[in-house]
Image 1: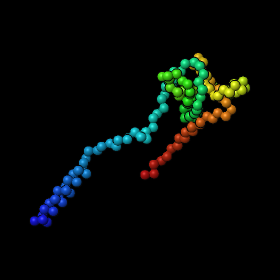
Image 2: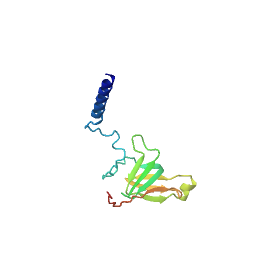
Image 3: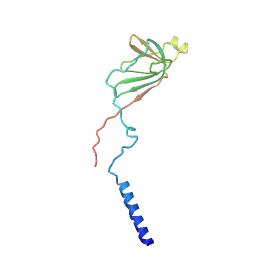
Length: 137
C-alpha cells in the first residue's frame, strides 16, 4: 500500500514538473535593450545656448560623424551642458589671456562656435573602425 502511494505521488510530481517546465509560452528577458546601439541622429544637434563664453571641461572628437562634443561649465539653467557641432573653429589663447590665468573656453557669437584652447588642453579622439566579418557557422 505504501509502495503504491509513493509511486502515485512520484508520477504526479513528475507530470506536474514536466508540464510546468515545458510551457510553450516564451517570456522575453527583462533587460533586452542593454547592448543595443543607438543610431546617431541625422539632424543637426539642438544647441540652444545664448551667445557668450563658456568654460570647457572636456572635449571629444568622434571621427565617425566628424562631430565635436564639448562639456561646458556655467551653462544657463534648462540648457544642456553638452554642446555638439561638426563646424568648430579652434584658436590658441592669447598671451594676455594666459597671463591673466584664463582657461579654455567656447565662444559663441552669432551661431559661430570658436574653441579657445590652452596649450595643454587635450581633446579626446574616438576612432571608429568598420570591418566586414564573415560568420564562421
